[in-house]
Length: 126
Image 1 (cartoon, rainbow, N blue to C red):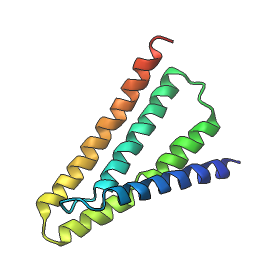
Image 2: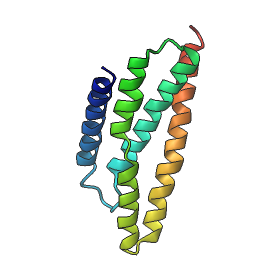
Image 3: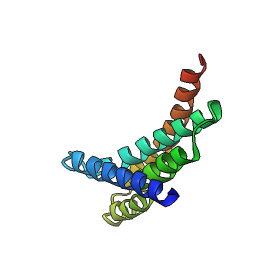
Image 4: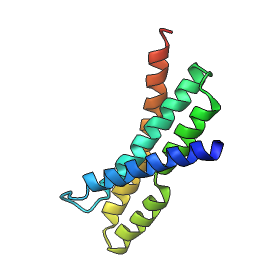
């Protein structure tokens, strides 16, 4: 059952990532915005899960498998991030490569913290 939950969540996350890449494919500059958005969204969602787990430890192991391991694992794209960073660097556009790394790492860290903060704020009244 655990593998089924991870597979279903992962498939949904991967489809979400692909959809984001389609939405942002016609951008004015050569930055993989879909991958940045997928990483930021994945970090926000896993931050919400972590925050909920801290404030309301009743989140079932099955829900964690589906959401954190499956959905967020299928959505976030570290391998794509490394590949695309290298691809941008290989064109000689080191400034764009550095911007991509900075946006992804700083933005993902901030979104994770935001997810935890939102969950704590929403559950403060419970």
